[in-house]
Length: 391
Image (tube, rainbow, N blue to C red; front, side):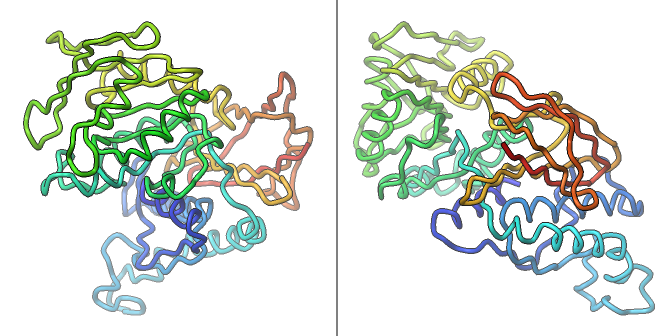
């Protein structure tokens, strides 16, 4: 899932078409899974294809239709193998093909709506990371950004995209976003620091995993970002090359600073107002209830009303829109066995909501008020649908 969003983000920035070769569609498994259970297999595969469609994939070259990798031994039509590549896929291919064709025009003419949150890919820090990265063989989208950041945002339906550091330095506008998350960025170019500080002072919320901007890309001490926010700062790597930060705020920032300390009395995180915005820095991950409470409080204050949300986070959703301003909410029940029902809330007054996944489209009864639209939705395991939102 992190790789899917990461790939879409890069293609969106560069005008490329997202494709995937040797696509394995029996993952990820977001519920109980027994590979001998056809219902589990069907729900998992349908969910997998649906996510790829919703996240912009225009080409999928299937590599594994079944768990045992039958293509390795030419099992496509081997009558001696009980599970050839064709047999198990029979419960999925017709369904996924119908869905792809049904929503083809919407998928081809829309893009994911610009989210309030971006995760910054810290290129200078990646290039300067140790040979064996502190995050265990560092891969940006499967390491701290993929596991820690993704797992805090995606299950709670907080919409986000990834933006490489060099895109911002090349002029990418930060004004369209309300929250920027920095995953382990101890090296920052001066141009990046300038842009982040200006954006925060104008009202943005910056959340950092690890103390940001300790060094320039060439290893010279910096501290300008945290010093301007928190005052005089001292930072050291307690285990050199492991990025285990010890942080001490020696001065006074622009506003009163809230600090959280760990069981040993060491500073674990601090948040401060800077201009009209906020800066929240953790020395590591937001991996305790207290730190996560601080993280979500800053996040929710920063973005305000989410573009869409589920009361119990039962569904995954992707909001897409076309150039004419038409909105479509792609919704998925990711569970392999549970029929799920939940209340969906969409920011905006949409008087006409239509479920395009049923017949020629079925009106969805809902309630509109206070700038929000709410309706109930019920989906079977692995089922996805598209709700057209019209004002």
